[in-house]
Amino acid sequence: MSNKKKEIIRTIKFVLFSASAGIIQIVSFTLLTEFSGLSYWPCYLISLVLSVLYNFTINRKFTFHSAANVPIAMLKVFIYYLIFTPLSTIGGNFLVESLGWNDYLVEILSMLLNFITEFLFTRFVVYGKQVDNDKKYIEKEAQRAKKKEA
Image 1 (spheres, rainbow, N blue to C red):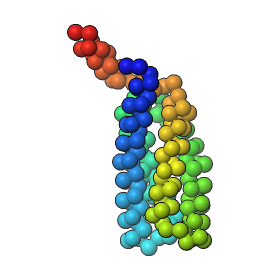
Image 2: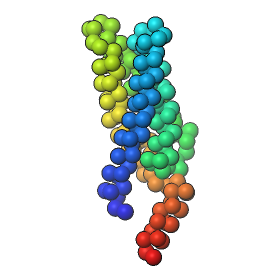
Image 3: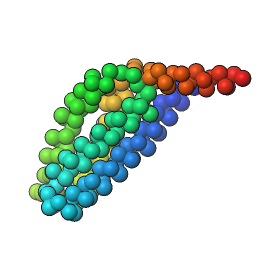
């Protein structure tokens, strides 16, 4: 399979898994917003953490097929979120609490910004050249190639 085709498939997988992470984030955000009595920022922060944990785990295995050192990969993602989280939390809280923007609009805008920047960061910084190097993935691709030749 060509590199271009692999990257297109990888991007599609990331979109789909991120959409499922987005569902986790919006459902948890909605439950917290509607039933906890918390202000915007703790609802956003809790829902973001739940989404990130899920998204990292699922994309590492199924999108990037990476055997990269997990603690190092997690540290890189943590560093990304050290920057993204305060900016999006403080910015989102300002938009909601000071400017009166709708909570859900701000949540969706934050999720879209997170999706785009996280994909680029994960693909090129977290995994870089360490994609498609998981042993099980390599074995599966070798079996697929043998079947194609037969």
